Length: 396
Ligand code: UDP
Image 1 (cartoon, helix red, strand yellow):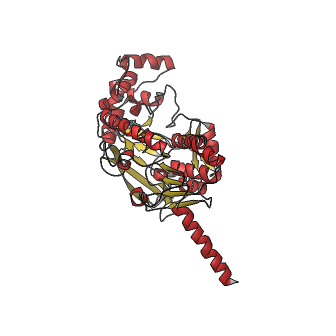
Image 2: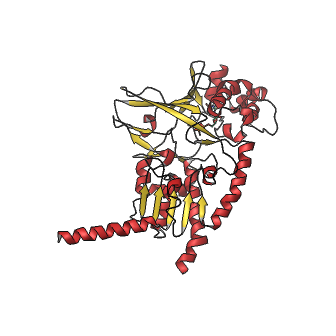
Image 3: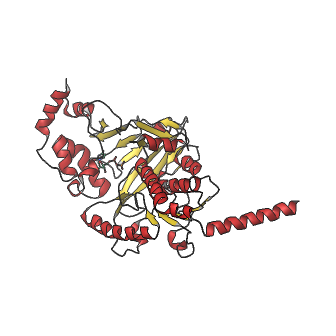
């Protein structure tokens, strides 16, 4: 009896090895895009999926883990999940329970803490003035604003909306530190990511749905890929397996496009971050999750993620973010040079699609995207794959 079970197990294992040596789908990268595609392709289309990742964990930059004091922290900087679209929220709700996300940020200027994004309270405190009405505030700002009709970069955008004093105190040096570039040389969409408010709303983002996965991001993505037709292989680079593992149907590639094409058109620049983490025996160190330091220190912000994970503990973790030009890719630097290089790679990417290799995600599309946006893109890609290629296989 025991022998039989042993033999059956051996057979099963062999079958498994065979199935993942030649999976239906090879998925490069175990971040949000990779996990969503593996979930859809296995649960909806019954395909076998091998996910590989060169790191030793899943969840990409959303990865969170517990330290020796059982405190959950975001290994690659805070991820303030929010949703522009309800259907993306509904989709992820299958894999996690939620807690409310109240993302409150303050900017420290001349030793004083200001609400950030800029709102009425920030302006009152900064200009030492009370505004009785929104109109009063607007006419005050009209005198401060610099008249620039079509702002072309981040500097012009902020000057045209808030004037020079606010630009210099809150934006200019933060941006230089974060990007290693002057705001003049960055798209207006960079500083434009942060709202500017003529009310007293002090939340960092505008979306109505602001939530955190109750047990963290890693647990959520783990739950997404439990189908037995999915195998996750960590510590494995695409380079090391690309000649050995040829999928039956398709490849999803979520890495950097330049390395995929052997840097044929040159290297794309990325801004990277170094993190320092420190645990304190204290309930809280800061009054809110994030303090920004535009004008002092080498780090841009200090983050106490416990404010959003809502863990109850006598300990807390502070992380500090030091922007660097080398290291893992975090932020695409969408200037003219890089965008030109990327548009050349885009043509090759289109060609790869004809061979059923699909590029998606922040790295692969060289775009500054939030987590809800990449999940949406992954769901759209799944639909496209279904319509374009899986119907053919199903009809065979
Ligand atoms: N920014 C700034 N001062 C701040 C916070 C942000 O000038 O205190 C600018 C900066 O250029 C930054 C951009 O706004 O790169 C977007 O900020 P966000 O917080 O959205 O960046 P992320 O959270 O994606 O790193």
